[in-house]
Figure 1 (spheres, rainbow, N blue to C red):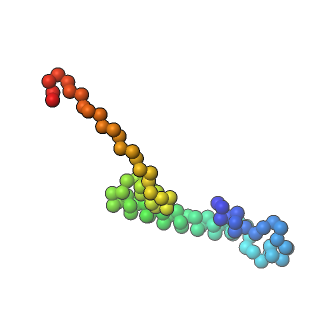
Figure 2 (tube, rainbow, N blue to C red):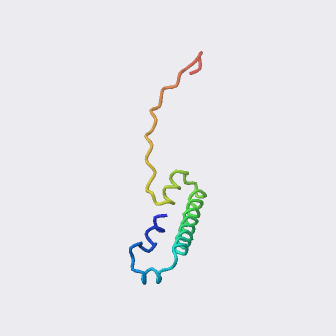
Figure 3 (cartoon, helix red, strand yellow):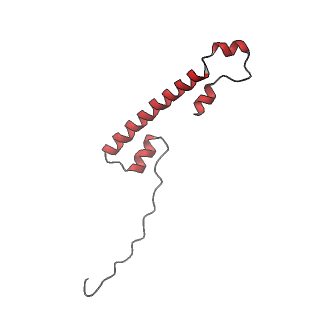
Length: 87
């Protein structure tokens, strides 16, 4: 949605400049189409990663180009309890 606001003509533009630019609805429609295209490309990349066995969090971060998944600290293993003669 930020692209829509950045692409829209400024309100302080001279009248002749406003007439040369496409209507705001057309600019908004083009921006939504570009966002949809980008979202579909990210979805395809995510699905390709998942089919290769990449975990959900890692695949999502990589497809969205957010960065690597935060490393999880390994849990401290607790010694198992032994009950009634089971060793």
